Length: 399
Image 1 (tube, rainbow, N blue to C red):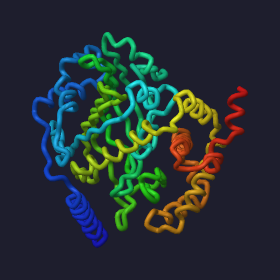
Image 2: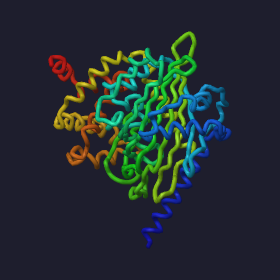
Image 3: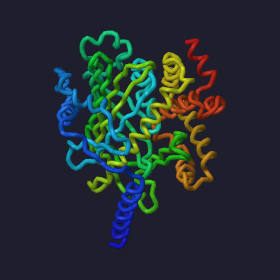
């Protein structure tokens, strides 16, 4: 009885803590997006059901795109409201590149789909495309023939990075649809996803150092990484996302992006998510996307594809050896920093049982993120040599 009371008090503390934290850095006001946008959002989300995507009607989504293109008050948090008992937010941003560049890097069959968002997504991979197990299509090559919309549907597995408030991370499946089309003569991409089922139980993770370092640790242990709340079984219950990328006219390349997102997550069937949580997550995502796509040292996509092809050739033993070196480096770098979770790392990696529970995809994602960090100057050639050496590259090129 006493234990249950302590847990109940701990839950109340976290609810109050999160509410106070988010209220202290809010906007001037929250404004619900106007009702005429809702039918188009509902229509797009319905297309994630495979049978519904076969007769796509572009006329249904004009209000969704027009809202993205409309002028807005920068001090206002806009949110879509056409879901019940679920928090939501809207965020938009510009990428100073053309849509072809975005497709070449972020929607390339040879590049993992999470690579544009390593601050938000740990890993992602398609398990089904257009009803089959097949390779993702090359969307960038289709931009020249958009006389009619091009549609890709499927199922994607995704695991996110640790939550900034609780440290929890989750894995789940998404029904997803990508629509490549022309809107008023301009090429556009619409990405829609809808969570299939309740996520795996939340596990303890930690953001190491500054979030922009993209150094994260995933313990594999159930619970929250919060004092007194390690026992909590949390879940992502529902998530929906509609993203619009539309090329703009002007002197230089520019793609304007708008993201509508809904999320319900928490524990004991309580939704702990507020609109501002989602908005901050979308900011986190957009800042990373811009940093990667606009970086002047980002190589051509063929070079990036080559490195990821090498990563896929590593055996499970090779991957474990490389990830072992990686986690040891994390422990050395952050081991004395109690606020960043050094203790959690030290306890977790003290034997190889941690490595044995990592999947092939999870280990490959470590190397993929480290490579992107290297391209952007977040680590050095000495760092990356631990994971993808010149010998690995030479061996791959020799066949």
